[in-house]
Each structure stands twice: as structure tokens, then as C-alpha cells.
Length: 188
Image 1: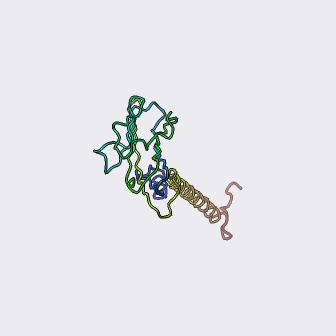
Image 2 (image 1 turned 180 degrees about the horizontal axis):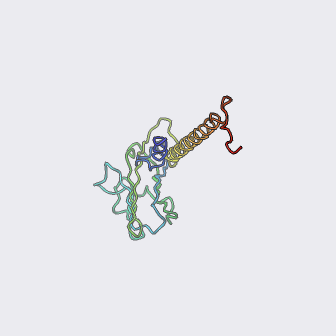
Image 3 (image 1 turned 90 degrees about the horizontal axis):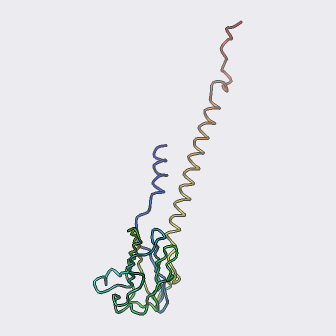
């Protein structure tokens, strides 16, 4: 029973930070999704591409404005915030007119007032083969949903096991045994 409880607990631990996988066709616009941990004002937002990090940003925002001068030349004029107001911590960017050269791992780093920092990785693949739509990857939600469903199944199995044990004990108690004879009443 302890191992089942431990397994149930482990299912609800945060999943390791694996990059989202996103595949699109050339010439599409693609949203690279990212959110701040909370809904405070954004102090700093950096979108990098791992292999181009030292050559400039994909997108850079500080002091309540974006700075194109810090962008890698390949991304100037092609990247914008999906929501310029960054409501509800949405710091996603739209990359316009993607090409094969945009394939890579993108790193979102956002810091809000108070110093809370969050990060997100996205592996973007631009290919002519049959890709998924050019929208945000939804598979992390699927992973969480499956984890919750598995957790519920485990809880149901555990509760069923306990119920079956209780029924078994009651049916096999001495008072339900036909050969059982109650002790004589000594008060008479």
C-alpha cells in the first residue's frame, strides 16, 4: 500500500523541463509560447536561440519596450509579442515567415517585478514534410492530463482494494461462519 501511495505522490510532482517540440512548414508564422510565473509587470524578457546566443537575441524587452538593436540581424522585423500588453504573463512571440534556417532551440527567459524568473525551451523544426499546425504546442497539457487520469485510476484501484478487503473480512468473520457457535450466556 505504501508503494502505491508513493507512486500516486510521484505522479503529481512537476515534470522535468523538457523542451516543447514544434514543427512548421516554411513561410508560415509561428507562435513561440511562453508565460511568466505570475502576473506582475515584466522587468526583462529575452528570447534566445541556443546556437546564436552570442550573436544577438531573437527578441529583447526591457524598461517597458523592445530593443531591435540587440536582435540578431536574421530576426529584425520578423519577431513581435503576441500580446503587446503581456496580459496574464503571456510573453509569447510570433516569428514571421519562417525558413529552414530558423530551425533550432529557442530559450525564453522572463523576469517580473520582484525577481521571479521563469524559463521555457522550444525546439522548432521548419520542414517541408507534414508538420503540425503553426500554433503553440499543446502536448504538455496532454502529459498533465494523462498524469491526472493515471493518478485517478490508481486512487480508484486503491479504494476498490480497501473496499474488497473490508467485504472479505466481514464475510469471513467468525459470526458469518456456519460452524461458529456463540459462547453460552453465563448470566442464566
